[in-house]
Length: 214
Image (cartoon, rainbow, N blue to C red):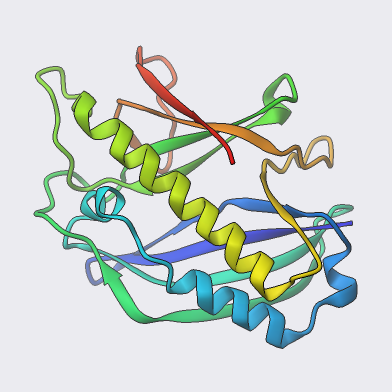
């Protein structure tokens, strides 16, 4: 079996790059039916998905979504089987002034029905501009719109993959290197603490908002 890693690519200013890397589990053997045209079509579609206003504003005008890299990897050994890199036809810039450092991010937690660390994952979305409350946390009114936008964005990726491979279904998943399993995501959640893309500050008390997936 195989799985697909989607890497949303972007830049911050003139010198830094970022990526957001969700994983999708296909219902069939994608490497057995894949040709480069399929991969290119899926990557190009994802590279041009609309970035919702609530997610775009977090990038600030310093952040730009520039493209997508798709990787097909084997479930056994994570061997790279095929890939495609496509630039966005029109790079999608964020909005609003940058008020936080380039390492600042909002964490989207991925939850499955598999217990333990192997059933949990997270992706980081750059957060250089966001309304904060008096405690320095994300304003509560901003959490749900961001979560809703992120769900729509992830569903768009799944739809783009399904359109390129119409005989195969795809599920957002968490990839466990330890177990070699790829359990499917049943809900996503976002906390109100601004984090960093390099280190998760688990010791800070945080309020979470969740939504079912898909």
